[in-house]
Length: 174
Image (cartoon, rainbow, N blue to C red; front, side, top):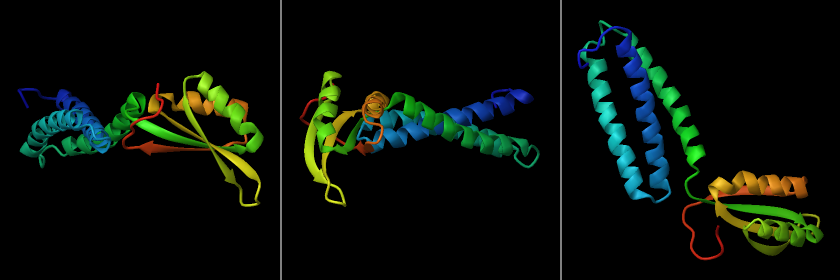
């Protein structure tokens, strides 16, 4: 590969594959979130790296099986790296549902609004018939830890559910 020999070939295979799989992971996330152009660019980078690497590995695979070992190990490492990068980027929106006793719902909504979260309150009932408030929050994924921490601090027994949102329009979002 480009006149590179020895341990550097394994290094390039490992980190090349790791980068390729990371970009492929991001491609899947971007496409799933409806972001076509970042998804296409990630796919382009991923496929370019793959073509170069696969050529290197297949050229003398039987004489040097360690290339395959490094390639396979890097695949797993790339999945971890890509997932970590995706969590750090936190692309897109999420929906958070907080179920609280009725008397705590209004206070929780006020606390969230003070932190610039858009909040809607619905009335609900538990299985035992107890009246509840369901606090709905639509937010950017980057703000999930902040909202969960605030909720846990105010009402540790609250039932909190967080769901991905494919698209969002209208409402209050900061």
